[in-house]
Length: 282
Image (tube, rainbow, N blue to C red):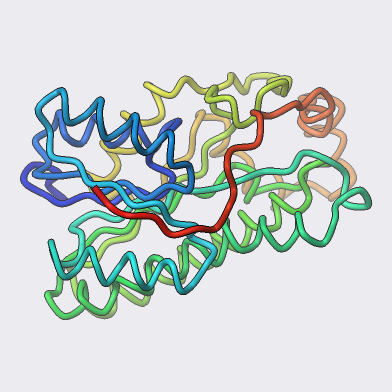
């Protein structure tokens, strides 16, 4: 079992949404410190102030996780001060809600850089130290979109399919390396954080509340759970896709459950400051 108490927890995309809430919950569970990486300097400052004022130890870095040089520099600083984190949460992610033909190459590259390469780069930066001490827990936030296709999120879905395949393969590698090297992969449906503002929840698939999903994630970490799928209907997706002919599955998911039209009214949150600058830590 992974203990959050007295641990050092690093969360990417940790200055807003479920990343920020997970950080607070880890501290409430007795984590020694939370290390927050995020690209938004204003959100970082607010998060640092809020958690510090509450009496917790929190340190922040402005990092674009899709930039290998920034990840390397930030990771070196973290390890020189605290060693490798006990728990690493790859939470940073972005979505562009439009049909593939409308995407610019810049949007495609940025989505892959943040959602896929970002998770890999951050994990790669800390894994050698975790392997050397024979202990560590990596949490990769994928998506229910990694389990089925969906119009108007083709690039996002593609990125999360990649995260799921990489995360599960990494888990197997680490299980062969040592018993205390753990990977938990999370595949939630839409979460009410603003990232997917405007989406219409599919039938029997309620939009998840941040409090609910973050609590489930931390419980999954504490129990060394391999996969966390939320809400419950997400468990059926691999089974249905496996046993139904593709066109019949499309009818069930698209026409009956409304999955394939869920992004039609997507607006998303306003774009944050995306300048890939590396800033000072706190």
